[in-house]
Length: 142
Image (cartoon, rainbow, N blue to C red; front, side):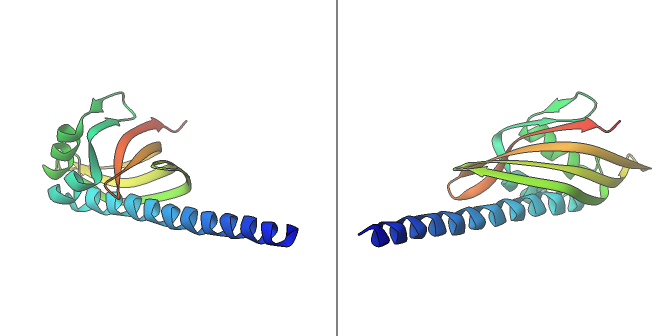
């Protein structure tokens, strides 16, 4: 009887680990979709990845809603040429995910080349089976 209880416990833990791993990978895919959309400026992709309740904070203190975030990138006002992510961590708790990373980018805002290196916190929520960016806050690196 103890053996069967142990097997049931191991099965539950294994299933939970597989589900967690699957969610972890789907969050990583959402982050990659966001990264690619920010480089391409694809309005539809940006609208799809962002929650309608998005709060998008910049390292300079500016905070945008979904429409402002999408317009800023899709219009080219904020133009990412490259984006590299490093030191990334992901935590998934049911339908919420928290992602932290260092974002290093080459930009071309208003035709002016530049470079950015910031720390970013992303909060994702799973809505109708799809991970959506709910909040983002960036801070300048010292």
